[in-house]
Length: 299
Image (cartoon, rainbow, N blue to C red; front, side, top):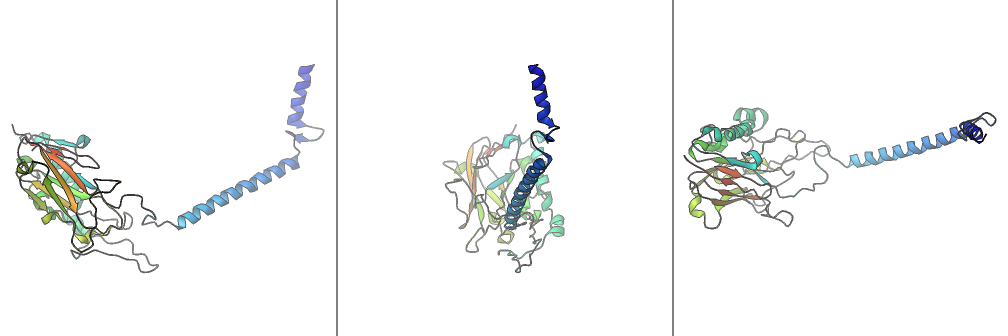
C-alpha cells in the first residue's frame, strides 16, 4: 500500500491532471520562468558581445597594442644542429654536409632574383620610415632588399661549402624582429664584434665579417610587423673563422654594438649578445646566452 501511494505521488509530481501542473508548475508558470531565463541569457550574450566589440576597437590588425617582449632584440645563429649542436670532421663530408644544406635552405629567400621580385632598392644608411597619412593606412609597407651576394665568401655562391670543407666555417647571425625598433640614436649602424675571452686570444685567429664591419644597415629599420611588411627580409651578418687553432678550446663572445641597444637588463643579462667556445667541429648554442663550441678535427 505504501509503495503504491509513493508511486502515485511521483506520478502526480510529473503530471497532475486535476491542477494541470507539470513538475509542480502550470503552463503559464513555466512560460514565465522560461521567458525570464531567455531574457537573462540574451542580456549576458549582449553584454559579452559589447565587451568584445569595445576591446577589438582598441586593437590594430597590423601592430600589437601592447608589447610585453623585451625591447632589446635577441640574437640567433645559423646553422643549427640537433639539440643545438653542430659537430663535424673536416675530412668526412657526410659529417658536415647537412649543415651546408641548412645554410642553403636558410639563405634561399635571400637570392638576388627573389629579392628583386619582392623587395625594393632602398637608400642605405638611413631609416626607412613609412608613416601613415592620417586615416589612410600605408599597407602593405615596402621592404628593402638584402641580397645574398652581400655575404660574399659566406654566401654559398663563391664557396658552396661555406668553408666547412677546409676548416674555415661560416656562421650567420641575425637579430630577432622587434616592431618599431630603431637600433641607433646617432646614425651609426649597429655592428657585430667578436673577440676571444680570457687567455684565448692567441687561439682565435682572424675573423672576417660580411657585410664589411659586420653592420646591420639602418635601411632595414624600423620593422612594422609581419602583416604590415609581408616580404620583410631580416639583415644578416656572417662571420668566417679563418684560422682558428685546431683541437683547442677557444672561448669567444659576440655582441651587438649600439648606443640604443643595451648589452643586458635585469630581465635578460645576455640580451643582444652571444658567446661561443671554439675547439677548432662542433657548435653548441643556447637560447639566452648563445654559447657555441666549434671543434675542427682532422684525421
